[in-house]
Amino acid sequence: MCLTSGVTRLATAGEVFQLIRSGEGVTRADIGRMTGLSRPAVTARVAELLQRGLIVEDAEGPSTGGRPPARLRFAASGGVVPVASLGASRTQIALCDLAGEVLVRTDLEIDVEDGPDVVLPLLMDTWDKLLNGWDLDGRDTVVGIGLGVPATVEFAAGRTESARVMASWTGVVIPPIIAERFPVPVLVDNDVNVIAMGEHRAVYAAEFDDLLFVKVSTRIGAGVISGGTILRGALGAAGEIGHIPVRDGGGVLCRCGNLDCVDSVASGTAILRDLRAKGRAVRSLADVTALVRAGDAETMAVVRQAGRRLGEVISGAVNLLNPSVVVLGGDVAEMFQPLVSGVREVVYRRSTQLATRSLRIERSRLGAGAGITGCALMVLDRVLSADAIDRTG
Image 1 (tube, rainbow, N blue to C red):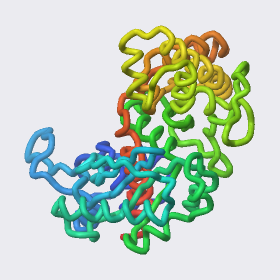
Image 2: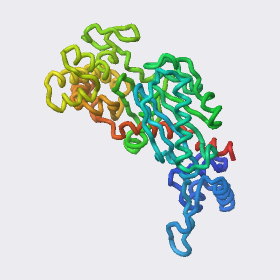
Image 3: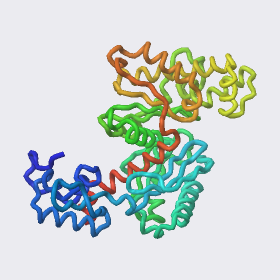
Image 4: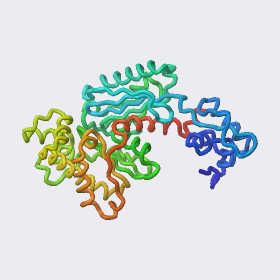
């Protein structure tokens, strides 16, 4: 990274901070070489960042002869980010440091259909308990809050526009509600978007800039990483693949009013419904897992057929988006290999040869943790950006 190439202005403190945060600039000499700043200018910017607690200085850095230079590094412990990734039946709540690492986490069974008047206070109470239990300096350490919700979100406003499983949330502007209690930046996005961001940054960013994450759980949704960044679309509705119809779905009525949406024929809810119709006494996906592990042929056939139907929709997305990797996450994808096999079978058969030449289809490596990682990164990319650092200097 060279800030002097084609740039006539001097690098700001925020830009110097980005070099230190990324690990590209670990000494004052590194920063001077990469930015073209004079030694006094580098010293002034580093001193400002040290004073603000954004970086720390180690006594010794790599030596090239003579006295070793001081080593500069990002102060990840300088603040905390409360986050929550809401699902239809399970919610992950955590505190993360400024590097996005989880400090403490708790999982709760929350019925999101109870509505924001119930759920949001519960989240905030839980964050307060975690902050107190972690022996942090109260809310003064909080730099921002990140939240993922199972709804279409108008990201700029933090407004839920169309909720997949919680209609009472539709039209709710969430950030002001949380900011009344935690007066910091509050960022809200679709649950699968934050999962896609977390999975991409933690696992694939060094290899790929284009990823399609498909969450298969109680419902089905997708998050699209294009050119290294999340693709939200004009109104936040990018990735809503759950209501794309499939062929030969059997005429199943979807809750959206259409027939044979992939959400209604391939989700965890659909698998349970189809197995019950065949006389299987399955109360939850755990019961389905037990039957799959026992080698029950009819159960495996139902799960694989769900995978084929999902693969039909994903194959169209692969042709349209040409991702390097398709990641399948959520309870169903993580528990059922026959579903993943069904997806692979159809995608490699129906997508174009060019789009699948080097395409990888994999199960999530982070699992449920991807959502809280993505929520933290969403906040940190905002509050620790060069512009944000310069504005608050």
